[in-house]
Amino acid sequence: MLNNVAHKDLRVIARYGAQFGDNVGTVLTFPTEYGDVQREYPIFFRKDAHSGEFQSVALLGFQADENLFLDEHGWQAAYVPGIVARGPFLIGFQNQELDGESRKAPVIHIDLDNPRVSSTEGEPVFLPQGGNTRYLDRIGAILQGIHQGLAVSKAMFEAFHAYDLIEPVNVEIKFNEEEQFNLRGLYTISEDKLRKLDGDALFKLNNAGFLQGAFLVIASLNNVKKLIDMKHRRRRDGVRVAATS
Image (tube, rainbow, N blue to C red; front, top):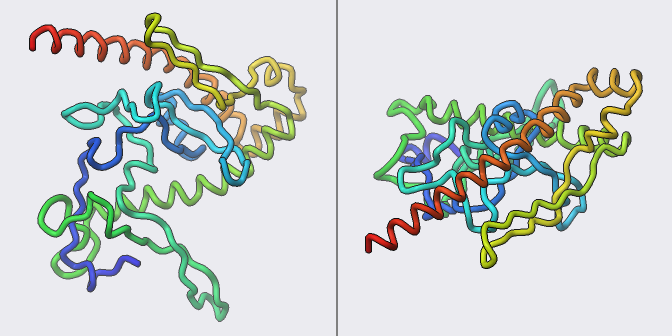
């Protein structure tokens, strides 16, 4: 658990790079950040391998170890998904006495084995007097969004399932005979079934705040073309570098 005594000199490297595990093809995302995520990335659903429950993912590339937003200068997007931006921090729970009752309260934890953790480089976590830095306050807000997003996500998928709105989708991309990708196990919102919902169903989805989420997921799929264009540019850049060498 993070505290300003044991971790008074703690620093965190806030930049992004493959050495920090950022070169991945998908990352978890949450309904609480759909508005920001859909401006940059395609949003899909997939089933958790262990629980079988649906979760949201932002597609970053066409291979497991390909993040097309990552280059030698860092992460090239206006918004970095919270699960990445949180760095080595995560939410844990601690029993606390609240109004005479013992309850589990969320508190910030840190993975000290994370490669971003340092004592000499990066953003300080605490002020010299022990208070939180702006960086830690920002991390706290990100973690709060993730914590809220987990709860919202469960309720959202229950509603989508109740109205049979989730459908499987195959993302098939062919660049040439040697380089083609077929991303399976992904799901999205059925536009046809959403369009056919009656007024009562639409009212209930909207009242719960999930109708906007469905529209944002659908709108985000336009970013697949953006990813394809980024892949083409990266391939062309790779050919030029090889030719120069």
